[in-house]
Amino acid sequence: MLRIPKKIAIGLLIVIVAAVVVGWWYIHPARGPKLAINPNEKGYVETIEGTMVLHLKGAPYEMGYQHGALAKERAKKVETGFNQLLERAKKEVGLPTFASKLILDVVYRMCMNNIPERLRREMEGIADGAGIDLQTLHRMHAVSEVTERNCSVFAVWGKATKDGKMYFGRNFDWMMDGGMQEAAVLILYEPEEKGMIPFASAGYIGLVGVLSGMNMEGVAIGQIGAVTRDQSFAGLPLMLVMRRLVEESHNVDDATAILTTVKRTVGYNYVVADAKANTARAYETCAHHCAVFRDNDPKETVEYALPIENAVFRADEAMDQTVRSFQACSKGYPNLPYGCNSYDHRYKGMATRIKDNYGKIDSATALETLKAVAMRDTNLHAVLCNVTDHEIWVAHAKGAEDAWKQPFIKYELNELFKRPADRKTTPAGSRS
Image (cartoon, rainbow, N blue to C red):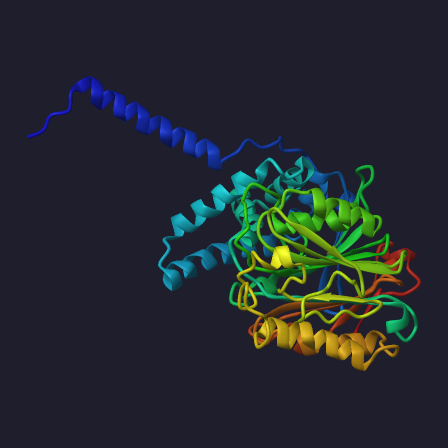
């Protein structure tokens, strides 16, 4: 029988214990202090046409605490649902639940140094206000970096529209069996930090990150998944990139500065609309490259590009040849994207409908385009903005039925950002 000398055995034990301690510390980063917050002092909840509208105002931790406390029951259901989703992953792909959690813990920790402290504090506020696990919230904000999604985004304005106003459409196409639609909410943020902009986020309880949104400076944002081989986990997670865009961008130039300088992770395309400047941009990104396009851009030289004046739109495929050279989506480089759903249904679908209705596009026409190009059986939510007038229409999936099939609720943000007693229109929303 092989006998390990006592000194070696003790040394091995010390190494193992040290590794466990360091590993535990790594995936459980230090957090800020818990604070006593009255969630009703500045925050409140209202129901408009059967939908939850959550109003948050204050410092980062304060807004997070309001979020968690005012939507406590839904937040707890989100926590349970997310953990059940990881359990399903065990059955479907054979990955043990602890391994799924560990992967997300490591991804979050690799990203953490790029996450602004104010957003980390807001997550802590949500966890404290709702009484849920902070580590689960961290994992939820890392999941965008390890999963794929589809999506489509378009912006039209000027000559393309009937009234010259800017319309912005965004489909969020992702798995619906995770039950996120049960936690749907419109969140109105009024951050009190200097330089931060009030904005609306059409998303889900428990998320500090943004998936679809528009701010009160007239900037609307959307993104599209674009799987690429050029990736890194040492960057800012997608949902938090989107949060920075909508909270910090007074105009499209601010958005460009953020997207070209932020440490990016995996492949995503973005569209940002600026109603004041009456323009929009498309951004095609991977970890180490970012290409920026205007409407009818002469840089769109690839044969499958369909540029249009006063219109910017994207699905998965990049028009920039460097970014495209890294892409595995849309049949993957060097293949042309013809025949894939992203190009034929989403990208070409938007281009065709914009051209067919050019000069006649209004909110109704834009909404029909949005519905037509949504993915089938994975359309988790759909959002249309009249960016010029700060109006937003939102539909969420119901059960297993796509968002585009549901009634769209119109919210008038100019009124909705006021207290109910001060509004001209009560409620500041309607069903269509």
